[in-house]
Length: 397
Image (tube, rainbow, N blue to C red; front, side, top):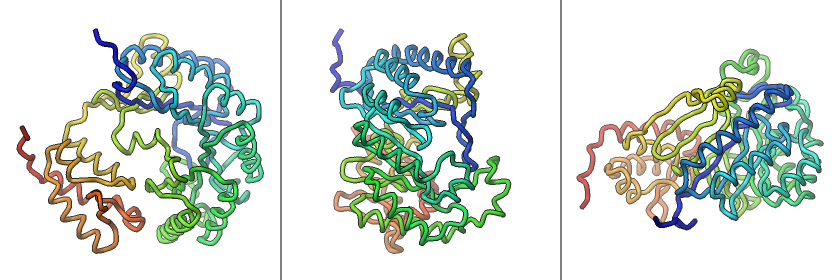
């Protein structure tokens, strides 16, 4: 039997959902728990490592080039636990030598000890949740830190040796204006990150923020749009390239892991509520920590939803996800992969271009402009309707 070399293997991303937080932010609807119950922490660690070992045996033809610890707050879970999980990944999968290995952190839960430990274990990218530079606003949305802690955390991250730092920001927060948002951007730029993510606040049903949103003086949709366009302008002027709707980076510092989601790459998720797209199937773990632990360690069911995605649906995902990025979509890729005609889509994109919402690149790819990103849901919805009406192309010999 031929042995695959690493260059012959399919790239694979690994996502670890760490469902623990010091406290729950007012806007958050991700699955997480505020607990320090050692039985749950230890049970989670045992279950994730066992699950990784089981899955690794099913992926001999893959080479892991990204590992991402999200949550929750992985830094709250601790360095020893994360290092143990990363060791399990390395023992069970073929992890490339230059793999991007990221962990999310909050400013209040990092320390020199944690950072030096993780850096020595091979973590090489940090995603720090700052969200805002205004302490009053941070308090209103339930963040467990102030801005001074965020500045201190960045300094500690650099001293520990990390050279790839991403900062998360939110616009559209209570009492925020376009002017105060621009000041936030200018202050955060002084921290000299390699990557910045800017997310518009979404008031999700079931969150505390949803219950009392009318009392918070939230910016309306038009102001959020102005904030978004201002971020694009400010970050571009400082050398940051927008490579996805919400993501900006200095040269060659894109999030390799997140690009997998947007470009149709394969990934495996571990932990409760983690999602996967692997071997043509999409599936999700159950949204229950105890159920996940019992299922993995006791041989029970941990998959909540398993789907085999039809080719036409994959074509729709290509449109939805690639149009989030500056890579865009192309006739050649689309027709070759999905055997559907691109011409009707191009006609619609030409109309978008006349309105300043799309542009055709020299490569032949179509991408949305920043103004187009603002209404991307509407544009993509129209394209999907067009796609649904299209007859398949004849198969090429």
